[in-house]
Length: 560
Image 1 (tube, rainbow, N blue to C red):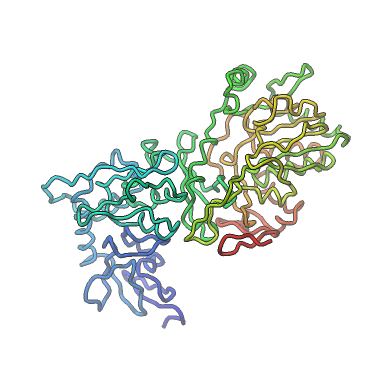
Image 2 (tube, one colour; image 1 turned 135 degrees about the horizontal axis):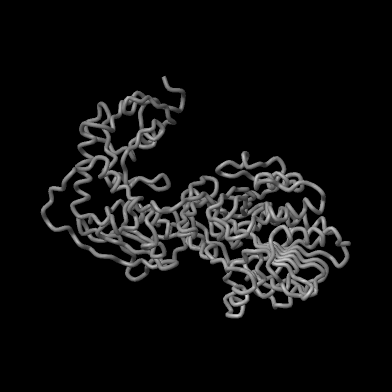
């Protein structure tokens, strides 16, 4: 007898107990039984349209669609053999009557469930002798090149139509025509340009009917390496997969987190990755000088430590020489002239925490960050709490929890005076500032990704990794601390900022340097109350709220 509020059934001989109201398809997943399906998606309504998930229910007069039928107590369900398997084989043959077998050139190959199902249990040979229907392609528009619709591959599962209707509630797609002439289309020439969430339909299309122009023919999916990460496009903190080939990010896809982004991400964040693929220079004066002279220096990576000598010119050195010289300068600093620490809101909590600690050791500082902000948020109407946030950087809340204050305008520029005393810059490339910014500082330490003209005045220009090249954490807009993992190999001598700063602090304070990102994170808890009691183990896969957080109401408003 099942406990109150639960039902117990048997699926392919496996007994499983699930909450009352569970669909057969979901109960089968609990039992470890896979039921083939196309139109069902856990984040959408289920119309039982594709007919792939038909199963036998003992006592029922006909096959039942597993995506909409709820399990009953004592039910005996069979998904394998008999009528269920015969039905799936027939449905697959029906789909292949028109679906082209262009897997060798289709971007979905390797992720196509039709390909998988046919391989598992389809007919060995097709029986159709008639030519396949040809509907051609359409272009739906949208961000970063837009979306291509291939009507010949579409199996009319309508996931895309239901997504636009139910999730962003922006009804821009529909089914037109009837029968085997049905196609997905936009309204007249309206396209998907006006939607900020439309590109999720690429992920949920179970075949290759909807493809991103941005990823078209870039890579076969089995050639990609994948790492779990956090979107850096705004302060929502959507969980993502970073897909990498040849040590370059090829695409971002949403990763399920019911507490933050459900199954989705916005189009702005999806295509905010090209900056992670900046090619390294060959460093040393030659290549770097040429890059700056030609005007493309802002796009080049800083990948070796550079120290300004007595002649006022920066010269390449190694980490040992650079760190020893910097520790000596920090140890001799007497605190006069003031200290300014400027950290980018795209740096991790670990990086920013160690930068703030160095500023404290130097005698206390103005701790600032600059970050671009949009005019307004772009809410995902159908998912409470999900929006493209106004802050267009992932760790604004984290920097504020660590004692940093906003400076500059909504373009992430300005707000800085000519610096005297000590200037510590982390991650902010100072692209809006003149070449002599910081030239008058007693000590100017620049830890960054690019050697911009303003960074050329630094006494120490030290190469650090982007968030995609290291492990770490961001704190999102509601105070949720979430982990990300390294997806790319760091160029040349670039190191995580927490590691560089930890070694400098160890030399200045005669202590020990953090051995890992997890160790650096634990030190944040010792210095800052919002992170006290947290660890990488506590954060787990879905993150955890920091001790000083805000509450987010269902309509997305923040309450202190």
